[in-house]
Image 1: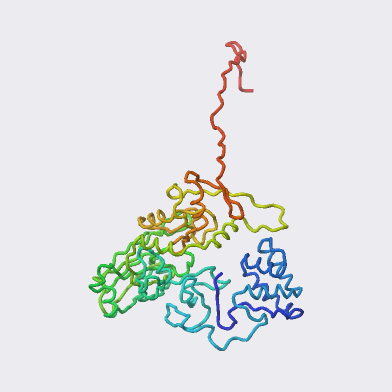
Image 2: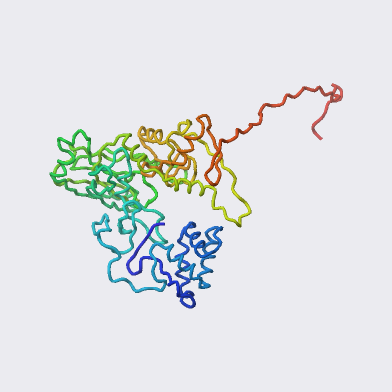
Amino acid sequence: MQRLAGVGGSGGHLLPNAGGGGVATEKALPFLTNAIGQLRVAELKDVCRAAGLRHSANKTALVARVLQACAEGDTRCIEAVRRAIARPADLHPSPPPTQPLRAEADTRCVCERNEHIGAMVQCDECHMWQHGQCVGVALHGGGPDSYTCERCRAALLDPFLPPVRKAPASRDANEAVLRSWYLPGSNPRKVAGFEPPQKHVFNFHISPQQWQEHFGVLQKPLGRKLSLRSFIANAAGKRNHRWPLHSQITLNRVRLAHEQQPQSWDGVSSKDKNEDRPLALSPAELRVGENELVIESRDPCRHLLVLLFVEPRSLDAVLADVLANPLSMDDALQHVRSIFGEQDDDDELTAGAARLGLQCPLTHLRLRTPVRSVRCKHLECFDLQPYLQMAKAARFPKYLCPRCSAHARPHELRVDPWMKQLLAIVPADVLEVEVEADGSFKAADEKQVPSRKRKRVESVEIDIGLDEDNPICLDD
């Protein structure tokens, strides 16, 4: 769940000391209800285990169980709740802090005011904080479950055209980002065409050192370019590139041709086709010193623009990055157990064996390098190399899991060592296995498919006694 902070509060959930109990605990119940309700199911089960409570239930029952134990003054439960919350403090309301909640080094916003002001949101990738109002993220009601800043979205957009990295293993997108801007939405009259389109002028500077570093004679074989990428500001879950609707882009008074697909109408509303491509600015379109970028649009949505240096990357290099970051065997076995759910001693029903296919859904061949996204909840895998080859060949790659459609960009893929070991043990002609809850497996028995042939029906002649003198009349 996304962490939020704001001026005028402690920035975290407030909890009582373990030895409080009594009246202090009763006064703290409103705060406890809010704090415990934001815990995940797995965290609630950990609290129940630590407090000696039953942990086999849904989230509503678990929250009620933990609240009841806290209301009764169970010190073990209160202490477990304190540990479960990310930023524990006293449950009693504390006065507003006089110091900023975090240093300026942890804050980076498009407004370039790197200080803590108002409600803020943290990026899941780089862990930097931004002003929610500046990046168009609504923080009322708890904020989004996940958030990725504009720089990380731009850096992860195309794995085959990533930001320039000074160190081979570096994932810091700030090394290559030149500028980022916030583009507010147009008012209804501009969107409808009653007023001129919204116009924004952005200036950026390229120093002689940067020009020589990226576009110099020695760097020409690398094919480096300056890429302009755009994203919807208030759509944290959408990672695809999107230009403002009906936009025109001018760089140094030269009109740029950018690929933007019109929205499609599904009978209810207009939807994006997700087929907008970012702009790659060559050295011929740029100049050393000041550059002027002008964008005119008629879009009610707010956008974030990122300008960064990029360079092509080969398929083998992307494959090597994924292979260098596999799952551990313990995490792989834990994922297998999570598929069957937790087995408690007081449960009357136990999960049986599950069938697991060993074929890639893309090639329909036996898996060679089984991978799965960190966002996938299923056990089945797909083959790494065909997946990346298809993404590289596609004009508009989606980077979604072929089984559950979860986000599956290369940095989110993990090689499953348990599945890899299974493929090495099971004979090559076996395409399906039965998996138990403890991670053991065996070749699945072939199901006998019932025959679909129709039974042959012998023809029978029936004499109903009709003649020409006594016909049957269907009308009453």
